Image (cartoon, rainbow, N blue to C red; front, side):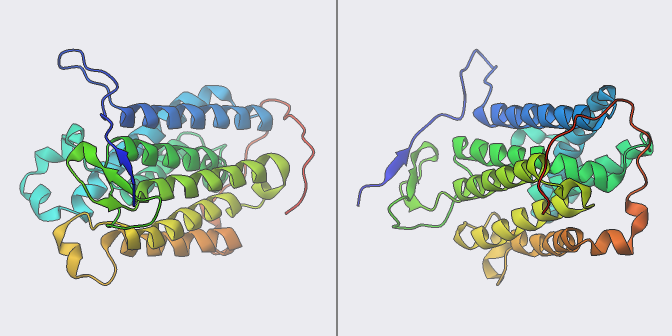
Length: 283
């Protein structure tokens, strides 16, 4: 059976030592689209647009720092605890989405300390749309990098990742994730703009967390393990780390977590502008 051969350079171009990569481009596209969506949401709901720069800064730093520290502690703790300075060497690769999620949640807390007019869950619900799109972009970036490979397979859509010297047809696991996240993005976008789902605290962020990490849990079954210590485990590290996020997502979606921990979200201050009215269906 003939399989698609992916033999594509991860570098967009090279000019001396300067070689921007498609992964970085996809990361930037995800953040820019997420920023634009959040900007429209702030405008529609009468929130101060000048807060967006601070919010974006917190999210970007939280994502990168969390993803890097998460990889180092979850997947290679022995090495990085012995070489702590190398945790800073982000350009060498090694980012973990679970750590990135934790980093964003912490970043939102730090941002909200200076913007008490914006509730924590209120923010998380509205950021979930752009986050889903960014997650899809990052997985497409992984595809350009020929990384996060799937297990050997003979399915018709298996891909040979020749760019890194591999000649075995494999599940394009990163594209499975990208597709799942793009579908989630479409659902969240529809929920916000066409229904009243955003008025139910925790509904959108709960769906995002549960959807992403349920998808991640099952797609891990067709992925190669990232580190040797996972080989003897019934569930790999990615699956184990996904379980608490799935539980938290379901509790948020059902409204139970907000009910049990009301301090997670405070009342929103009076609007600074008149919100844009849109017709919506209830869900």
